[in-house]
Image (cartoon, rainbow, N blue to C red; front, side):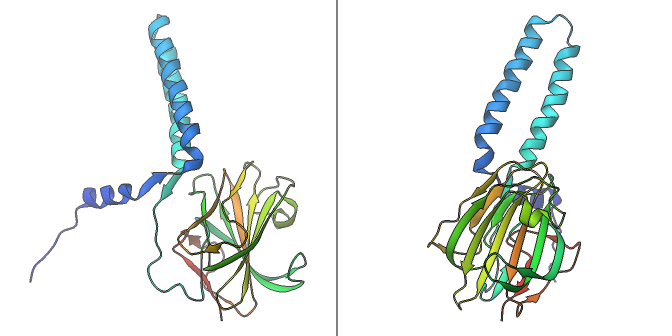
Length: 237
């Protein structure tokens, strides 16, 4: 019997190869890196003591690495049949799994599943279901803390309605948080959409709500961590 040993370094390299920088952060990271390099060079050449240089590099360098971590974007593909499945549209933690009255579009009860994203999470958003985008609407609003119940309706948000191949409607809501000040939505009205495709991006701490038919079966529980485009959060009937 042949025995194989795991190579931790090799596995780590494979994972790193599957991570790229999201296009939303490319310009910001490049410009900030150039400014960081320029400031460091000026302090090194024109200041006699090197203490300001090391303080500058240490503080701003750490901030740049935090921004780099924020804009990371793993390359992911869902393995298996996606029919009637609802996958997590974001990395984060489940903060709501409950039946709610939805008065904006459905005017009836829906199963609501919400994912809170901290500043440390990947902030790319994926389509949770296969289907067709019926409409995309953006609403200005407040910037309450994203985990609060009122954030779903009062905060700035973008609504994306998707109709699945079997005719069920799923609403995805991107919500800005207390720190998030920009919601980017790639979904376009009347376009086909699929699991594995990016729905959008939200900068800094924020939240994504998914409204499903009551016949859907939730597959997650409160405080459960999620991986965008990987974790199955519900099954449609």
